[in-house]
Image 1: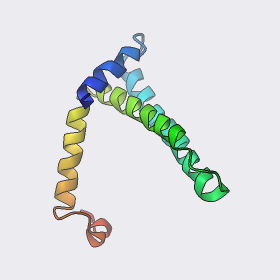
Image 2: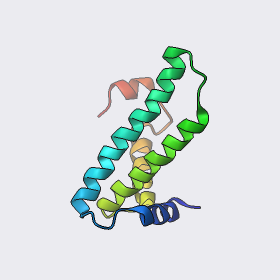
Image 3: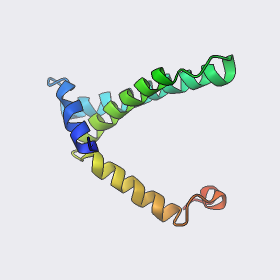
Image 4: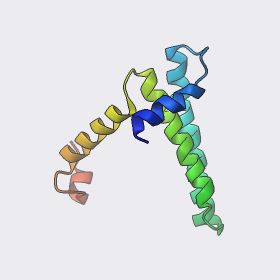
Length: 107
């Protein structure tokens, strides 16, 4: 499955009663909430001695992907285009791969 197919399938579960503004708000709030759930799993592993619950973390990554697809839809852009734009930004920032100094002195 490619990312645009994922976005199309994921959006079948979008609440049809939401306006684009409400979809945008729900999307970014969902990204924050699900990211918080993901970091909580890692925190429990690193700071509290729990085994890393990979299955749960993968589920949360899926939820993050859903909210990313929703937010992109609210902006009238495909998920593939979001990813392409991000790769172009990274290639411009780190043309030869990650560089600590370029990370510190970002323009």
